[in-house]
Image (cartoon, rainbow, N blue to C red; front, side, top):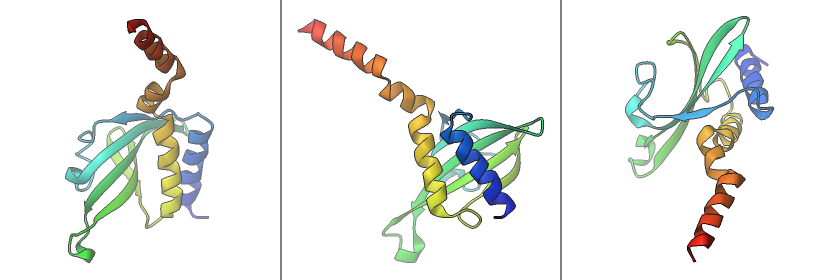
Length: 136
């Protein structure tokens, strides 16, 4: 296992066990550190503390027309950016982490993010249901 895979697996495990809290941020956020920010369609952010240093973690989802197929299909791409005080430290892409591993992280983050928690909260759903029943 290389150093990228070790760090990635730590982030994946910390996400699984709830140590890392993810929130969805504007797709336009962090444009100064993202390559081709105009093709970002969603991003998530968390903080990782390692060796007494705080890092921002960004999962960036991109889509663009694929030139390999005469732009008839869209391509989906993931990046995991790690920043320290707003400066890019490293970027993990499919070149260093397998796509299926990256997808596993995105699936976890998507379901555990702040907006997903709010959407799927049982309390909120039951409150809405009660309000709707009260109207009839």
